[in-house]
Amino acid sequence: MRRVVLGSGLVLLAVLFATLVVDRSGAPRDRSEILLTRALDSHYEMSALPRGTLEVDLDRGCVLLSGQPVVWPTGTTLESAPPTLHLPGGLTAEPGDTVYGGGGHVPRSVIRGSSNVDGDVDSALDCARAGTSVVFFAASGAAMSVSPGMLLKSWVGADDLKRAPLRGTLEIDVDAGCVLLSGRPVVWPAGTQLTTTPAEIRLEDGPTARSGDIVEGRGSSLPAAELARTTQWIEGDLDEALACAPAGTEVAVFRSPGYKMTVSRG
Image 1: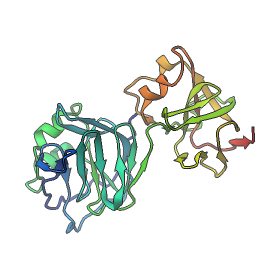
Image 2: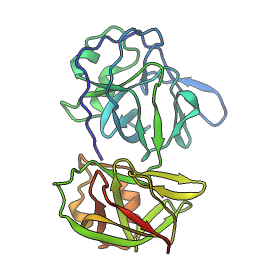
Image 3: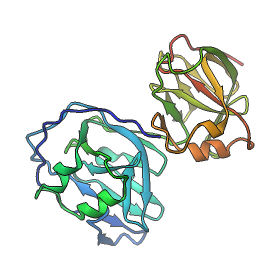
Image 4: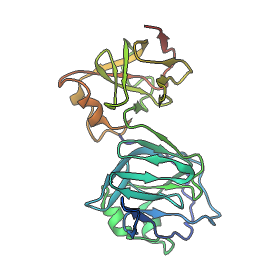
């Protein structure tokens, strides 16, 4: 579930302020060790679009994006029960959702050595593997977006998968959090979007598909065991997706970009 987008290495961090974990009673508690955020008066931004799957472990005090520590936009807060990240502009994200927006990646040394980072930086870095870079979002939360975790997406190029035909009937169950293709979990091309009202998939090149429609494209049908939980090229909640189908069911993985995918009404 990890996607690395390389951004500019030239970064100055602005003053960051403490964020809050809000419980159901509405009483805020100072938990600056949970989130790192940016100040609005920064004069330096990056032009990349970092993205990844949100992971929240309140017991360990970790909020990660595809395993990477994160400096979130100003005003980002965390609700603890259930874990919900509240982003600028009214966006919310739950564990398993894909979050992306303007910003980039910076080395750990930039964060660790900066006096402009508020919070327990060492603990935040300890949440991730050694050597992992830090996701750095724009202070204003520019171009932020959240994609439901039930939508798995890949960044596999055209030559990374077999060019076998893939075809099946789309099944979307919003309540169960499942998107299947003839009973198989699906990894869609990177530009795919999912809406829940109405429940439909919008493919990368424009066509939309709803439950009962036939979706065709090219890619591979892979055993679930081959989709390692630490994969670098899948976004979304892989475990939940696999739980939607019987054990041993293969996964339909479309190539990305999703050129020449078609939809016919079922």
